[in-house]
Length: 184
Image 1 (cartoon, rainbow, N blue to C red):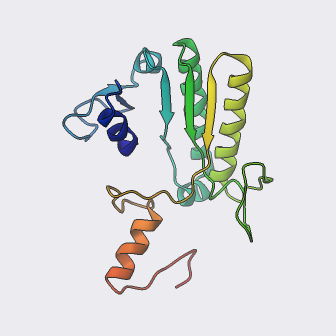
Image 2 (image 1 turned 120 degrees about the vertical axis):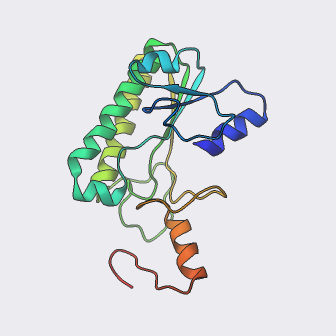
């Protein structure tokens, strides 16, 4: 999200970051404009032409341990779509998950490849895609779904269970064993 913000700001787009925290608790770069979604998400998106939805309550591993938390991801997406619709946002871009909605693959997947999520997180991402498709059909809002997999950028830091590329990079640089899906 921060990389998209920086990209847009560098090109003189009027943009801001929305989060659940207060502006003081958001821990964003000092020049970053911020709006809290609390108490009103509709107010936070008001005036936006395009909204990029990169927020998630869970990670794939956490979703497997606590699948009900993935329902919060779906609810968050629905609330955002509804707020965008009411605020007349023209375009919603949703970060889905190419790594989890297709299941196990032996070849690269195209956009029209059949989905077969094998995790709670992937099921929630796919359900969110379907809800957004419904919003796009019933309103004037355009929806774009990005099925990204293991996204990495120069500012990414290893934090909790996120960031497989930074995890691999750090483990390899320090000569430590790499553990994937419980195997070394």
